[in-house]
Amino acid sequence: MFTMMKRLVFGVFCAVFLVAGVMADSAFAELKLGLLPRLSATEMTAMFTPLANYLSKATGEKVSLVIPKDFDAFKALVVSGQVDMGFANPLVYVQLKKDNASLDTLGLASEKAGTKFRGIIIARKDSGIEKLMDLKGRKLIFVEEDSAAGHIFQMLTLSKAGLDVKKDFTKLPFAKKHTNVALAVFNKAADAGGIREDDLDKMKDVVDLAQIRTIAYTDYYPNWPLFSTKKMNAAAAEKVKAALLKLRPNSPEADQVAGPAKITGFTPVADKDYDLLRQAAKVAGAL
Image 1 (cartoon, one colour):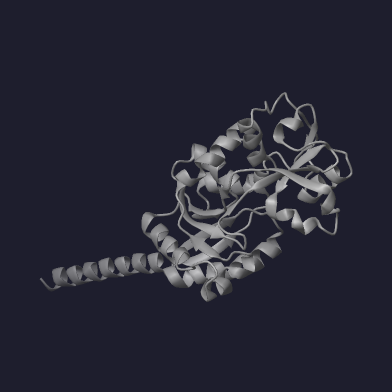
Image 2: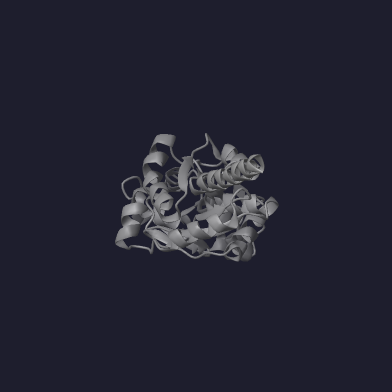
């Protein structure tokens, strides 16, 4: 009888120890946040460490940063479920979402210009180009094939205007940078070009903006989303979402936590908010 009692007590002790261990592991679970590497790993780490620390404290889960070597490596991390969350430009998000339905938006990054952005199409004032239909037969230049505001947005705008984006104009080799697009237009190497709207004023020391005309504006599109992957459980996702939405744009806390990443805060966002971008990406052949 005494032996049976000892066995029972020992069994209960082991069960309690096991449950306590599981709870401890859960309490200190690590959430990995993958960042699209638009800058060097050193720069990205400095920019986003305050946000990771804030999310760790707010959720009770350790949040660590994962910065892959390039865009393809980032996509691979998300698809394979090696990260719990991702932060990427809107085009990369919709590309990933296409074949990974489990991705879910948690928060929309707000920048100095707001939560939405758009592209423009520029030409020289002496080019004779005043409207989109004037681009027929002309030479156009854009930033990159997958540049949202430097190519993708413009393709839908041109298509809506009645232009065949595959036949009605010549598309020059991609310029790689928004500044290079402006220079090509200014120097008459291209008749017109597409760049992000808020990048034009930044070029006042590079080109004479008095010679440049904006002939069209694209639609507005939502900014970068922070999203969950298939690796993240629902409870953790809700905690992260709640913590992000407490960082109201331009609030003192958001400035301290997200400011180093050039983000003014976070607002709610739904996957359907990116439907117009999906339409533009299909026209451009990027989706």
